[in-house]
Amino acid sequence: MSAKKADANGGAALTRPENQGAAEKATRGTLKYVDDQFGSASFLKRSMDKVFPDHWSFMLGEIALYSFVILLLSGVYLTLFFHASQNVVQYNGSYQPLRGVQMTEAYASTLHISFDVRGGLLMRQIHHWAALIFVTSIVVHMFRVFFTGAFRKPRTINWHIGTILMILGILEGFAGYSLPDDLLSGTGLRIAYSVAESIPVVGTYVCYFLFGGNYPGQDIISRLFIIHVLLVPGILLALISAHMMILWHQKHTDFPGPGKTEDNVIGTKFYPGFFLKTNGFLFMVFGMITALAAFAQINPVWLYGPYNAGQVSAGSQPDWYILFLEGSLRMMPNWETHIWHHTISWNILIPGVILPGIMFNLLALYPNIEAWVTKDKAYHNLLDRPRDVPVRTGLGVMSLTFYMVLVAGGANDILASTFHWSLQATTWVLRVLLIALPPIAFKVTKRFCLGLQHHDEALLHHGVETGIIRRLPSGAYIEVEEPLPAKKAETLAKQIGYDPHHHGDGHAAIAAGDGHEPAPADGHTQTVTRPVGVLAKARTKLEDFWDEPREPVPDTQPHPEN
Image 1 (tube, helix red, strand yellow):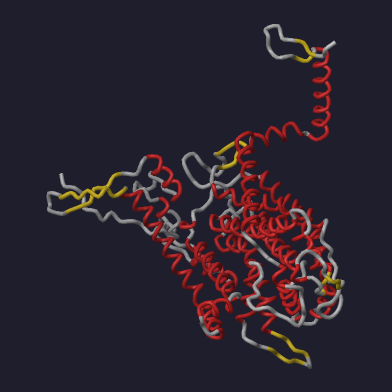
Image 2: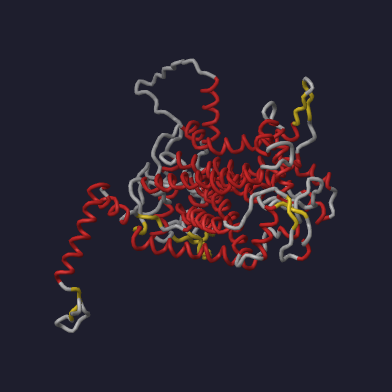
């Protein structure tokens, strides 16, 4: 007899009541057991109702997450065919120009993946493009977090995790970039060996441990392979999980606007709206990376040839995230010090070890530095606009300018060859720009931010210019202005901290916090002298530097006469 019967009203067939009851009972029992053990029902309900703000900039972190997923999947495929060995073999594969050439097993297996494994070249290129996009999206995501102040309390720990993720992403990219053992990646390994060797006292021991002897050694490829496929991915996976759990636990940040406060989030619920959108975005990221891999060639190792310690090819540039380190090494003058029969190579130690250490430590500690200087201990769920914090924005652009000059320095030979410049002159110009451009960028950015603030205040105070010229009874001419639309005016007022009830002038954001204390009622002022340390004085000066007051907009328009 059939287990199903027709519905009395001609509907679809239904499961027999007794079977349906048993199945439902079993399901409910299982769910109840899981809920009793883990309390999952309330967690799932809260998770499904979690609200995500609707703003395009929040997708930058999702790009990093999805490219990491693609890296894991493509990396597993490539691991099945790669041989991480520096044993020398004779190549007899499909690529004719290199047949009969002596090379390491690592390079030979890379050629095998590229030309003999079905879909191997496409998978290699997917993996490489995904790596570039992974690091790029982390950096751009950190730009968004920095310039909007999303790193402030209570999200400082996530900023620290993000900084470590970026450093590990760079290390992971360098390790994977070096595995094929071609002439280009071998040159990068030679530079890394020299950088490690420049560390006083321990440098030679570190190199000997990593490379298994004097350069080029016999173990670096196999050790990099373990680092690349096991150690760093495991740490990345753990940190990304922690990053996501902290993000899930906290409220999402959002830009100021109508109805938005420090205590609420306005947007789309996780299920079904955000869930469907983010899954669609996953496939968009995967499709874009696959399209790049199919149509944009990257890292054609067969053109470089196997690595030879006695050869260096012209125009040897690493992937973009290492290029700043290449530039710092190229621009550093040739300084060395000889002490007690030991040589300290400042021309490698400073640009290769000290400078990156300072850069990454300042990046990691910036939230703590800003909170200490500004004495800001409040919780922040609403974001800043970059124009509203001109000093922070100026510092960010200044740092970015410094970094970009270093990147340009990593391509000084390409610049000199392309534009027919002297290589020495190009290097000296870049050295000067490295010192001169960052402070100029800071001043210009700060003035831009103040100008944009002035523009916002003018819009809110005067309205939008209509282009209509009107003559007053006094003979003066004015341009007629009309108020902003109500919704836009409310949004702008929220963004700049406008309070129409403050002093009746509508400029609470300007008047608040002017630093002037009210005089005592009796008219007498008492001065209390306390000892002030060097650190406190420095903090006061930095606070004065950080605190940039808004520029009020005077009402310069002549008023119509009645």
